Amino acid sequence: MSSSTSTRAPGSPAGRPEAPLVLTTAPPQPLGFLDQLATWANLGISLFGPLTGALVLATTGSLVSGLVAVVVGCALGGLLLACSAAFGARTGAPAMVALRGLFGRRGSVAPTVLNLAQNIGWATMEIIVISTAAALVLGDGWRVPAAVAAGAVATLMALRPLGSVRLLRKVMVWLVLAASVLLYVQVLLQPARPVDQSAVLGFWPAVDIAVAGVVSFAPLAADYSRHSRSTRAAMAGSGLGYGLAAVAYYSLGVFAVVHLEGDDLIAALIALPAGWIALLILLVDEVDEAFANIYSTTMSVQNLFGGADRRWVAIGVGVLATVFASLLDFSQYQNFLYLIGSVFVPLFAVAAVDFFLVSRGRWDVSDRSRLRLAPLLAWLSGFVTYQLIAPGTVPVWSDLWAGLAQAIGFSAPSWLGSSVAAIGVGALAMAVLGRASARIARARRLR
Image 1 (cartoon, rainbow, N blue to C red):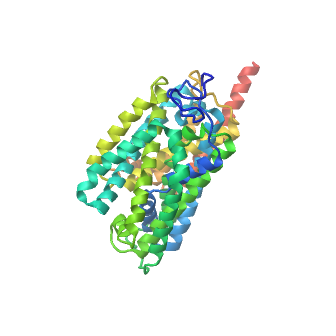
Image 2 (cartoon, rainbow, N blue to C red):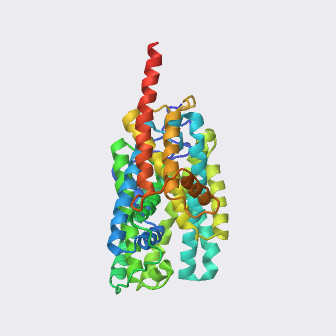
Image 3 (cartoon, rainbow, N blue to C red):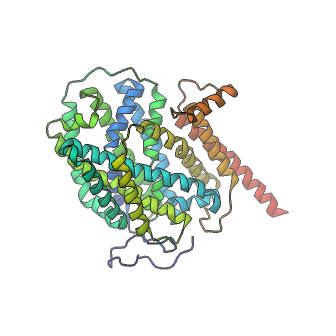
């Protein structure tokens, strides 16, 4: 990636470096391990966490199995997240620009477009959950004003991302920790109830949900780790911070379903003694997830248009997500998680194998990087594997994959999880195809 020698964005206060406005400016690297640990822990603490945990429990039908599925899924997802953070720390490039090293400049367009859709979708979903919870606490009339306020704050944070990271570390992490302890204590003090068995699919499908929730942030990791002082700090800060926070909040959802009554989990948490206070704190903290998705959308746009000023892109994305959030709901959240998993779980498994084992960190992230077919084929193999095992419930799409599985005589065993299988197939394909491609290239050079 071509860059200037400047390490400070125009308008940044002296000693307070800020993210560059355009792709061609070199990124400052002020973030240490604690900065990134606190940032990713804040991102992992989300009202979507209990909702995801509730889905995990419903899928397993067992408290113990649900908790184990949470730990396994978050560990797998956290590992891929840590690997994706290494891409930015080592290359200095944002996430989708770093993927030029995997796919080439032209090949990186495909994951960039998918990531744009994902980030706008997640920003919208975060604003929806903020406005919905705010309406439960303050009254129905607050839903749209809360959505507008959340969208505006998230957009302002995206204008000064490194300043927002400093704020998260110094202030929000302590408030959120206190709110989390309060919610856990209040939930566990309630009597336990039998677990509903009507939606049980098994252990590994539950792991898939947990993995997808964590990996949804893997396409964003390098946007922040490019500002890390070291690769080790980036990997440890992101993997541990987000992974541990996700375990805590997914587990809160598992326990909440067992100990609380009612179908609306957020409403049940608010009804706890002092629960509304904790939820208000978490509502404020929830804005950082929307901010992260808005900012990373700007980084993805810059992979396509390197001269685009991220501030104007952030304003446009923030307005778009806020409008969507005022009109939509999150009834299709589980399908959204599965779709994200099918795309990005195998992608970052392939990227990790190539970066650490095949290319050994030598990625060309410039505008001149050439298309690489081996990673594209490996990614495709992982994606197809995921879809054959878990095509989801989207009309037409799921029927297409079910028909293909029947046509080739494929029937996935009940114990096989789509995320684990996609990771294994994609990683193996990248190792084999990558080394074969390297041997062919060496042979050509010797001619």
